[in-house]
Length: 117
Image (cartoon, rainbow, N blue to C red; front, side, top):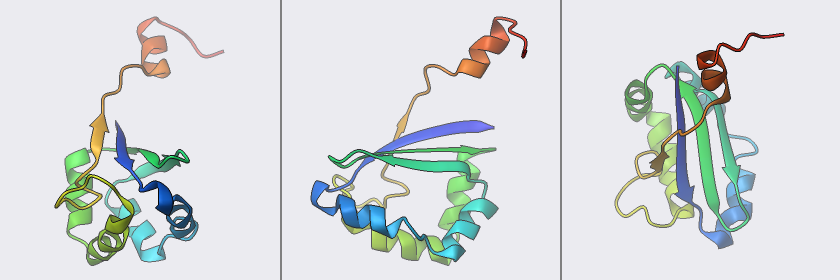
C-alpha cells in the first residue's frame, strides 16, 4: 500500500467555509473515492490555510485516474477550486504538491527486527 501525503494552500479568508463544506461531503463523492482506491484518507488544515492531505492506495496513478474518470469528481473539483491559492490552471486534485515520506515508524521497526509485544 502506497502512503501519499500532499499539500495545498486554502485562501485564509475561506478556511471556515472550506471546513464547513467538508463536514458533509457528497455521498457519491465518498463512494467514488472509496471505489477508486483512496483509503484512510484525511485532511488536516491550519488556520492560515495550509492543507495537508494523507491517504493510502495500492496505486497513486490508478487512484487519480479513477477519480478523473468520474463525473462527481469533476463537479466537486470545480466547486472546490475557488478555495485554493496558486493552482494556476490546475484543479485541486492535480495541483497539489506531493510530499516525500522521510520516516515511517513501522518500516524502521521492521528493519530493526522489532517484535510486537
